[in-house]
Length: 161
Ligand SMILES: [Zn+2]
Image 1 (tube, helix red, strand yellow):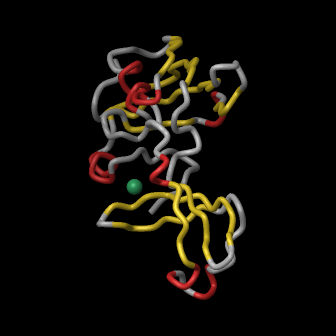
Image 2: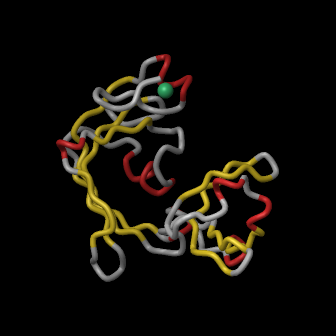
């Protein structure tokens, strides 16, 4: 079986930055599975896996536009604390908030507070970075109807809903 849209792909990977530092990794035992063709992973990774098969080892380097996008300075914002509900007015640095704006949900990371403002960063932490992936494909299966409807893989031992 080959990796194509609506298949669930089990991979292990090591992600390094330009200096060779490990940013993220997942071993075989982590059983990281995702639904191919549904933007569950960055575009360049989907492209690299498409058409490949179990046992394939893939080494791929992605520019930001194939990864988490360019760093956008406009996504660094100061937002008055008063617009947040009382319990959210003193967030900790590094806390993530999901906020809907113009109908689009985005994850914002709290950079800190400045006076009466909360400083939020809507860039992904890996935005603007080249990503160097080494991965191996351990399994490929046809996704269930439910997984395709939900747009993500339902892996054993992971959350269910
Ligand atoms: Zn689901």
